[in-house]
Image (cartoon, rainbow over all chains, first blue to last red; front, side, top):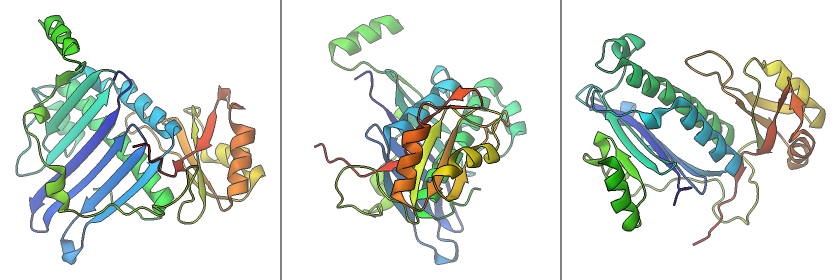
Length: 148
Length: 140
């Protein structure tokens, strides 16, 4: 089971335009699922699924490992609240992390938190993961995920 | 204490260390999607690489952190018309993250690029080149 791998990220909030969220998930077979939901102007959920090659999964694992997120813990991170919620779940190298956090608006918010170093790692990893996924989804489906 | 827990876990066949509030505060995937299906491009295909909406996409890794899109274009243009390049920067350092996606219109062009460029040196680094997307393997 040591080669087991899974990664899921969610960011969202509930408000005027319903439950607006972005979520993506990779499993070790390379299945990437992507979802983007908003009821803004009565929009509906966008979901896509594609299998990526093992090279892509290997690179994803490298990005995660390089970040050293697996050494961190969310104990002192600001909890999900009305502003929003983030979830990052990763299974890699015999570890299974499942972190939750409110939405992070800026580097300043990270700096002023109780665990700026750990939260910073999370903050940038999430951005890098989004870039990675958005490029894959854009290239394959020719849709432009909106980055908030 | 952590070591004891690991031994117990291994004895039970579970060998993962769990961390994070999310373990205690789970949300249901199904709840968010209400049964919505995830759209694929071609759910009934044989194994192998798969075409994307407008072409064939290859995936390059170990790209030099100072690479420019031009460098990628130059290296890959000999195999065919490069329709698209995605090369993201690390959001913290501003350097190239290390991977790139290159799109060709035709399967043959993409295959040639993979065959010729995989394992080649680009900007002093040995790059790996492979397909980005593949057809699902129904292993179960």
